Amino acid sequence: MAELAKKAAEDKKGRNITILDISEISSIADFFVICTGSSSTNVQAIAGSIEEQVKKTLGLNARIEGYREGSWVLLDYGDVVIHIFQEEERGFYNLERLWADAPVVASEINIS
Image (cartoon, rainbow, N blue to C red; front, side, top):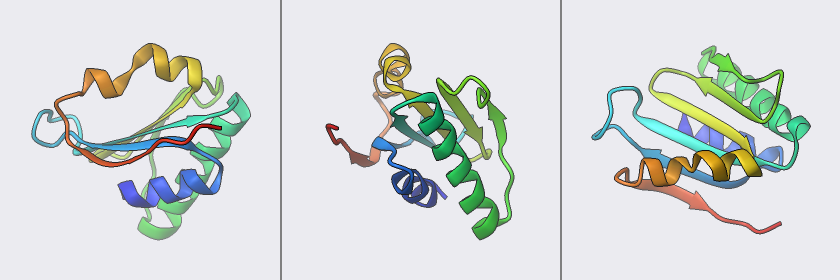
């Protein structure tokens, strides 16, 4: 599911996508998918794309937080939690640093 979310985010111009395996250090989820959108509209489009692809492919619905504001949308699928940030919020919360003990499964840093 994390890879499916990554692909759906890429399809909507999600940037700097990272997948962290937190399964050995936390019981809240197995994976975090973290990505950046360029605006609230882009963050919402990324979230919508992920929701659509996961529903279509796996038949699962997410618990969703922050969609209306669009600065940080969280899609919680239980084992996989997806964080979609605008640049400023991602830097402020810095989940990669907070979860620095988690192995990085995939990371794509692009400057644009």
